[in-house]
Each structure stands twice: as structure tokens, then as C-alpha cells.
Amino acid sequence: MAGTEEKQLMKQDTKAVPANETQCGCQCTRVSRRTVLGGLAAAGAFAGLGGTAMAAAPDAMPPQVGDFLVSPSGTTPLTPDSIKLDSKPFEAVAMSPDGVVRNAEYENTILLLRYDPASLPAETAAKSAEGVLGYTIICTHAGCPLGDTLKNKLLACDCHGSQFDPTKNGEVAHGPAVRKLPQLGLKVEDGKLVVAEAFDSRIGGDMMGEDDR
Ligand code: FES
Image 1 (cartoon, rainbow, N blue to C red):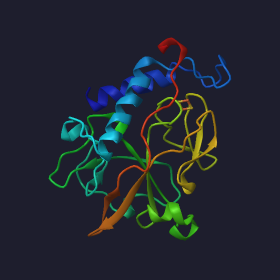
Image 2: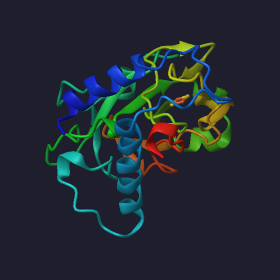
Image 3: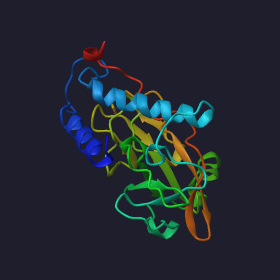
């Protein structure tokens, strides 16, 4: 599915689940099959990074080591200064060194944030590039996209209220998510942001709603 269409569908799904809806302890039961399948597809892509190759087109592959980062609408490699310090998340996608923009799957979208490197714990700083951090946009609870603003300095999901701390390797600050947000390793080469390591854990949501059982 094309990236733009997928993004629109995911945002529709997000709106279909009111944040205050109470249907079970974790408010998870209205998550659609399409959203969950999106998470599973992304999970498969992550597994492919570890060994078993997935037959994914280059523009549908998750970020690869050596890729540049670009805005979803551009092909100019981003630099650390493209990301404002202590600002809201900046959406980006990976672009191969030969110019293939990996935007065919919305699940591969990356959220970039920037902090003073000295303020970051060692594990998180080690994956940063001059303070720029990269995380998946996909919530680990049930696969909704995270919001484009921070809430109390945390990455937040409007589907069921999970929040993740970008300054602490994406650890869960508030559930119902129980798994940290996957972080992408970044570095700077010739002044440009480059992928240094694959996501450090599986991309995608863990929870399947009752209507999918
Ligand atoms: S999908 Fe449930 S909190 Fe994000």
C-alpha cells in the first residue's frame, strides 16, 4: 500500500478510538485488524533485518545501516541542525545512498528529536548523533502512530494513552504499553544524519483487539 494512503488510514483508525473509551482494563478492544496487521508487517520487516530475508521492495524496507534521513516530502539529507533542540518530534524517512526513499510503508516512519547530548543517559546518548535521537512512530501497545507533539516531554499515543520517554531509550512512562519504543542508532557522516544501527527492538504493536480474535 502506498505510504500516503496508509498514513491516512492509520490516522482514521486513530480517530476511531476515543482516548477516553473504556472497554477493558487497557482500553484496547477497538484496535482494528488493519492496524494490528500493519504492526505485524512491520515486525516481519524487523525480523528480516536480523537474518531471514524478507522480499521487500527497496522503498518498503525499514531503515538500513548507511541510509540518510530525509523529510517525507524531500530528498535532501537532513543534518543535526535540521532538528531543533528540545522541540516537537520531526517526522523523517530513510533514503538509501543511491536515492531510494523508503516511504512505501508508513510503519517505517521515524520520529527525530534533539537534546543536549550531555543531558542524555549513556545508553541513549550512544545511539544519538550530536544529540539527535530516532524512534519508530509506531506505538508498541497496538500499533497506532504516535502523536506529533510531546506531552509533558513524553512521546504520546492518543489511541489508549501510552507514553514513552525519548530521553531514556524510549522506556514506557505510562501504559498500557509494556514494551519500550524501538530506537534507531544514528551517526553523523560528512555533516549528514546517517543510520548507524537498525532499530534496537521489534517495530509494531503487541496487543490484538477482541474483534480480531
Ligand atoms: S496503540 Fe494503544 S496506547 Fe498506543
